[in-house]
Image (tube, rainbow, N blue to C red):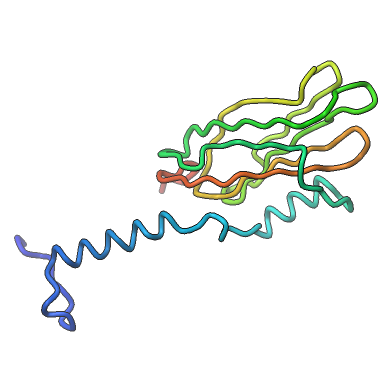
Length: 162
């Protein structure tokens, strides 16, 4: 059992070190794949549709910040700020945080009133994998605004243990 590692017979000149190096390079290249390749998954689109109904969320006014690279998805700092005067006439009613790769797309919803002063929050969330996270802001006038941020998670959270 000392030498249980065997190479495929089709590559007799491939040494174990070269074989493992090639596997490592392939693994690293998949880690650094462009995050823009992430697309809205059907569950995310459905979750957003439940929030906005027949409205179309517009880009802008919502700034979502998460680290672009995190070692562990267990505690990821998330900051969101929505541009609003926060007056009795014009304020943010709610912000919904949606995840592309978590088991449940709805991470949380935060509610605001004009007495909140500012529509900003900072919290920590768990992320199951590298993904795009969306913030959908519902305004007092019935409009919806969106923002997103991408992150690369090297050690996933939200995994089921067997």
